[in-house]
Length: 103
Image 1 (cartoon, rainbow, N blue to C red):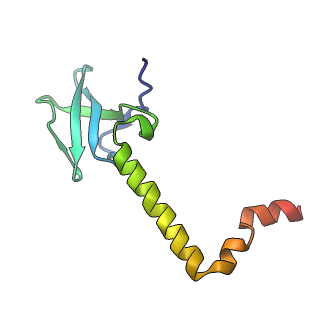
Image 2: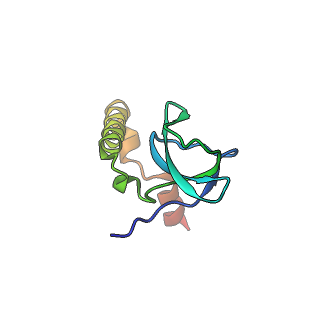
């Protein structure tokens, strides 16, 4: 099974948005692994690293499906609450849909 990792991101410009393990590129050019949690790199290699990349381009394959499922459930709950308080908006076509129909 081949792993489809993400592109490399420069450490000084970007930080991961999810906690988890990432492949990091050391200043020597070698690679290692480091964990990102609570806005900081933990369990990192002793050598300095300059870039990082996710282990899977598809978040559902990253091994953190419980977090993704929880976020999806929360989003569905917010949508249901929104529709309960504003039922007329749920029935209206989306702005993009209306533009396509009138064109």
